[in-house]
Amino acid sequence: MSNNTDIQLQMLSLETPKNAIQRAFGIWDPRATAQFTANRATHASDQRLWTEPAELKTLNQPLTMSVTQLSCRRD
Image 1: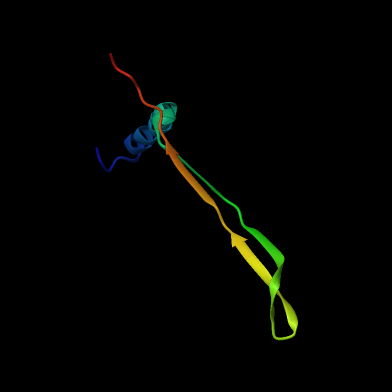
Image 2: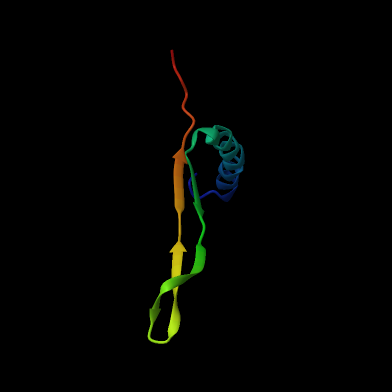
């Protein structure tokens, strides 16, 4: 029976409803989010290097990450 193509096709047709059931319970799966931004700024500095005024360059790269999961409370 394991080599019978008709039986294997019938078993394959059960995978779609099985996946739909698992997808319905997917709300309980963890969810990961990330947010990244890059901010550059250039400011004139009071200090002079050689003959040209110096510039103060800053780079700020905040990263926020979180993981959330809904839980099923059983009383």
